[in-house]
Length: 383
Ligand code: ADP
Ligand code: MG
Image 1 (cartoon, rainbow, N blue to C red):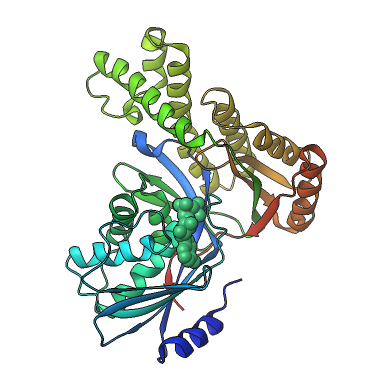
Image 2: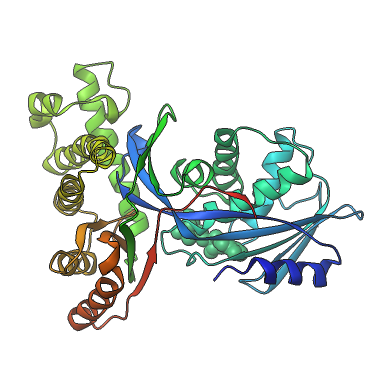
């Protein structure tokens, strides 16, 4: 639970001054998986779980950060941060401040308290949420108000170069530009986006399988090289195919036979996933929930069969959801090989749905899943 009053009070007790407080949300991706690095489309929504960042200036030249979650404090000279921030939670906020200062924002010495209720490392982007909350707090002290798109890019850069995680722009972008009761269709190449309304009788039910298979990292790298191999083959016939996003199903019909079977199937997933993701935004805009649910089911099947990035537990979670009253659509969300499924559920049935999904999953796997309910939340803001 986020506790604005509590964070303000703790910050004031620890650092002796009343802070300004900012909130940035986590997110769930409704559809569009492994399309980001192919320059394609994703459609996340911000969720009711997020990170608070409370900030006050200091006059001793230092950046002091306390994490309520880790019950730990770090302290550095504002111009003397460690060279890189991999391997410790403080890398995320320190990276953001370092990148902001390098980009010319005059972030002064400060005290910062962070507290988050996004489950850490569960694929709901606690990382972007702490980054963007920190960025808003630091920019407040710097008396700057850059465009949201620029804030997202700077936070992504902090995670890429300071933390050392090769992530795309989706997580930071939705935290910066999401809107309450909307999903956001993002073109990962141009960063053009449009909002698509999620009706208020629809709930987001996020089911944590509680597994993340150990080979996930290696498989991620393999998928990326398979996709690159397929893209090169298509490019040799049609040089205007820079990224797989530029290829069509017709291209694949013509030249797919030149690819090894696994490469063909990876490419087919991404090309059809881009089509499904844009169609899903259109279905939401038209209020066509049946169509949206069908697209999510097709996306899961493609992720499982063509991209081979699902796992037994995630398939069980999705199958179980499909038999429960109130389901609109379910699929595995995130990088694959475990993590969370996302379920769109009729709001009046969501509590019951969550309970039954938990019980079904436990009956079949003996695992106690965490199930989170949310609505589509607002972008980062002052609180
Ligand atoms: P995800 O983004 O899916 O939650 P990541 O591995 O990308 O997983 O990011 C999780 C990491 O972000 C945590 O291990 C921690 O280092 C950092 N983090 C997120 N929220 C907080 C917080 N409130 N306090 C300190 N560190 C946090
Ligand atoms: Mg993350």
